[in-house]
Image 1 (cartoon, each protein chain N blue to C red):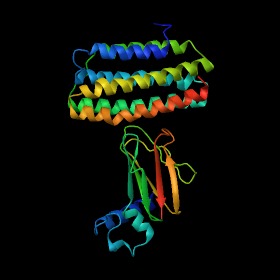
Image 2: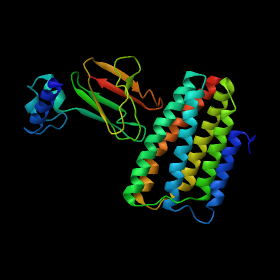
Image 3: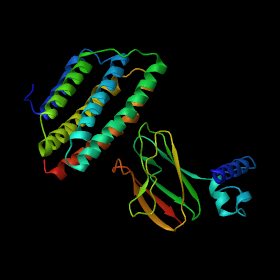
Length: 121
Length: 174
């Protein structure tokens, strides 16, 4: 918990220190990967039973945040077993740091017609 | 009605929804009640499947119906409250409620594979008919932009459930 709090404070302080648009900001190029990941998560919205965007390309070490904007729970679950969010409640978020390079298909275990893919470069 | 196959009963409901609103669609207060009733009906059937279902996929599907339709209903109720709309009864909501009660009563008489088959068959027909009603009546009739947006937003839930139910139906060899 304390670690999370510090990480959050760090993220907030980084947010306050300059532009943090994904892919922008030379400020963060020299920053440790973990801090970059905290400061600039890639966001996948879960809306109307779909992952938006359905395919997201990130750099190894980047954080991806799934934000569930639906009124029902969903999951983001790798079909090859790499990651599994478990149930993401309505309105909740789940964050994952993508370390391994490759293409990773995932779906929602509750609603298997919902499909997405992460491309880690 | 009691011996009417469930798919036919659902088709009957669809005919009722069209006939009941032949002279202009339902108003927003009626749509609100129809949405809440449609969700509640499937929550009730889902609870039964969770406890009486034989196959684990059927039980899990029933549980998901309870979770999802409860979630959709919460957002519908929140919006209705925010808009200050008082849900209003209509022949469609009545018909839905009656159909739901008959379905549950019928399912209670069944056990094992027969229960699973009947439950899933009804779920396929029910979600298909609600989708038809949404596309033909509810979404086009909704006047309030937020109500219309909510219907559009939750529509994919019914598509996902329909596809899922069809998959289970195929697995059961029904």
